Amino acid sequence: MPFGINEMIKFVFVTGGVVSSLGKGIAAASLAAILESRGLKVTIMKLDPYINV
Image (cartoon, rainbow, N blue to C red; front, side):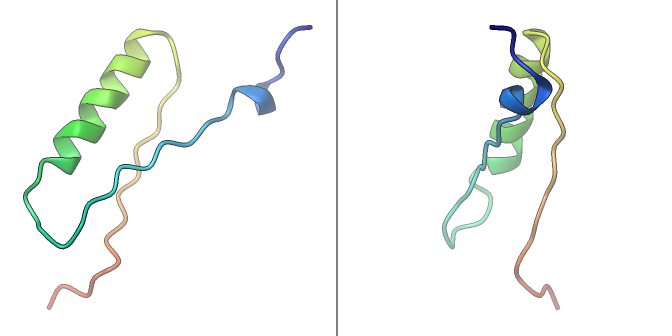
């Protein structure tokens, strides 16, 4: 049975704790590059739930 587009949609969340500068952005970008090299369409979205004042 061929796969439709809805069966190919997946989500990957890269999260971290309270320590900043752990390299989460680098890890997410590297993972996206690997997935794109395998022919997948990747969209990266950054969410910062903290109020940076």
